[in-house]
Image 1 (cartoon, rainbow, N blue to C red):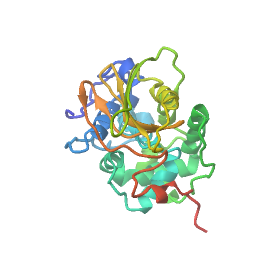
Image 2 (cartoon, rainbow, N blue to C red; image 1 turned 135 degrees about the vertical axis):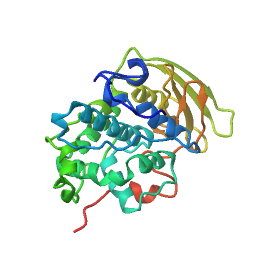
Image 3 (cartoon, helix red, strand yellow; image 1 turned 60 degrees about the vertical axis):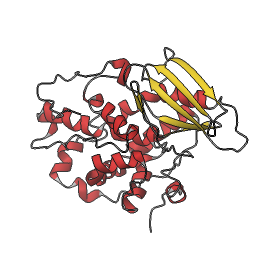
Image 4 (spheres, rainbow, N blue to C red; image 1 turned 90 degrees about the vertical axis):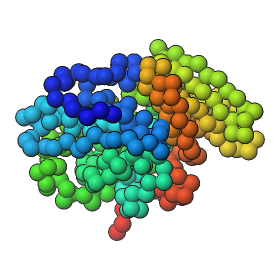
Length: 296
C-alpha cells in the first residue's frame, strides 16, 4: 500500500481516475485500499496511520485533507460493504459487543478505525447526520430504514481538543456524507454486463460496470431482477468496476442486495458473503438487526 505519504499532494490529487473511484481529492485517496483489504481478508494489508492533528484543521489544509482521507472510506464500507441501513446504530451495537471481527468488513473497520469509533459516534450522536444520510440512501433505494435517533452517549469525546480539531465546525465539516452517496447516485452512463449461472450449488452472477459512480444503485436494481431461488437463499454477485477498482462480491435476494466482498482489477478474491440486509454475520445477525433502543 505504500507509505501513505501525502506530503506535497494537491487537494484534487488521486492515484485513480474519477471513473475508478467516483471523485477526486482526499475523499478517495484511501478508498481503493479499504476495499482491497475487505476483499482479501487473509492478506496482511497495512492501513493508513491515524492523522496527527496538531492545529485546528481549518488553519492547516494538509492536516484537514489527511483527516478526510482517513475517515472517508468508513461509511461506504458500512453502508455498501456490510449492507447496514443504519451504520450509526450498527457501530454503537458493535462497540457494545466488543468489536467482534468475524466478518471481513468489520475486521478492516476494527484495524483501521477501531480505537476511534467513539469519535465518529460522538459526531453522529450529536449532529444525527448519519441518521439523515441513511434516510436519503434508503429513500433512493426504496428500502425501509429505522427512524430512531442515535443516543448521544459520547458527549465527553466532544470536549477533547483532539476531537474538536478533526470534527469541529458543526454539521459535516469534512463533507463525508456528500461523498458517501456517490454509489447510489443516478448515473445513466453506467454501462453494465451481467452473466448469471444458476446451475452452481450457490448460483452466482458477475456484474461488470463502469464507472464507480452509481454502482450500488445499479446493483440493487439488477439484483431485484434475478430469478427467485427455490430454496429462498441468495444469489452471489461479483461486481467489478472496469477502471481498476472493483467493488464487493455481493448477494442479492429478491429486491434486496447485500454486499460483502471485492475484486480488484483482474485479481478476484472470494469471501463468505452476508445473507440478509443489515446483518454482520450469521452469528451476530439477530443481535445487530434489533432496533437500537436507548437505555432508560
